[in-house]
Length: 156
Image (cartoon, rainbow, N blue to C red; front, side):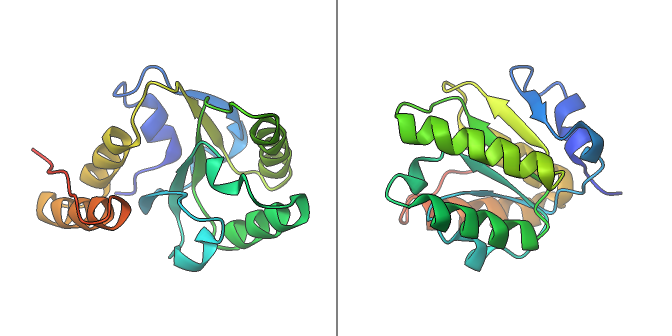
């Protein structure tokens, strides 16, 4: 059974989540979860992931390059963007506007979370819904290990 963006939103695990774009594409299957850590994240995606971001990774990226990265991400058929309402700079706010326009034109759901919500809880939840517990634990460990430079968090 596939786990979809709609399932995530309706899971009641994260009542603070709100869909801000892409209502027509909630049936997209979620095949993984990744934090957007580098501007060229599209090179590291296998496809079908939800991407979690505050857009800080694009602070030193020009407008055209940002659009090129969005295009590369879109080609990977991501499930959704999960954006933290944490845009402190004018550039981050403008890139959020661009992301919303891009997502709308490409029918990609965009979910907003409060700046107080941590990505790891979302990732943990998604992985336990799409994998058996052992695979979820291993995937979570690898994701946290890679993201935190060797400091891994455990799924209880």
